[in-house]
Image (cartoon, rainbow, N blue to C red):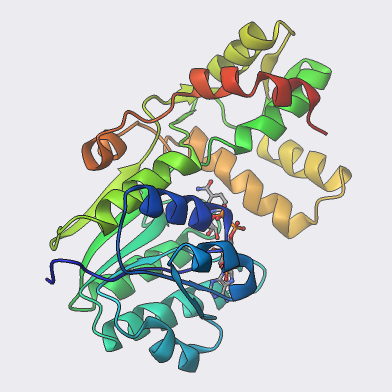
Length: 296
Ligand SMILES: NC(=O)c1ccc[n+]([C@@H]2O[C@H](COP(=O)([O-])OP(=O)(O)OC[C@H]3O[C@@H](n4cnc5c(N)ncnc54)[C@H](OP(=O)(O)O)[C@@H]3O)[C@@H](O)[C@H]2O)c1
């Protein structure tokens, strides 16, 4: 590998992508390429020396030019969940283009237990992991837990009624912040790691819904209790609130995954990779106390 590898981040205008670019710049990484469907959104980064290129996984022919010259590439999974098979095809196109462009190392934002999960879109991640394994590139599969940021809205809603309804049972999840996922990805991109590994990217502790409700109640001073309901009730509740049935089923599949323990336990990978202890649920909720009480 060269001394100063060229690092490429796909999907760089997304929420995770921009945090990763910020952290790469803070780490004084040289030779950064950011690809996105919307280069205009990354004008500030171009002004800071990042080479911004257009890339759309739905246009595989655009990817040879977009990925040219990259040594280490982070493939951020897309949000194309609406059309069955679409996301996996997008990711396969990106993996093939990376190999074709001469990328030596690829990292990918996957899902914990991607190969054995009731999450409806887990097969997209599993298929992408297998496509990566079938190349000759070295890789780091970053199997993410749930974003801790997702807790804000659901706890805010729960605090309004005093009840946190879900079908997660006693299951625990090791929620992780986007900033900590970014730390793990940046550590991999800026390292010389050239093996092949699959890591669970989690926060430092896994908690059950009852434990999370108790924490939120203590932090805000408002009553909140976990109320277990059947999966059908969770789906119906979302549909009644205006969520389309297929989307409600996707969200609800995470309840099943948590109930089955697929998002537990916590791993030490974020700290091992980055040297930084990831944010705990307690610290995160304390820092977001205002949003827990006031978000819409
Ligand atoms: N673990 C979790 O709890 C959790 C929660 C939500 C999402 N996710 C996953 O993590 C990813 C990043 O999260 P985020 O918060 O940054 O989401 P986000 O802000 O909604 O970003 C969506 C991402 O999808 C990319 N994308 C969409 N269509 C694309 C295409 N045709 N070609 C290339 N890239 C495409 C976007 O890239 P550009 O717009 O720059 O082209 C962007 O990086 C999501 O896309 C999703 O797969 C995980």
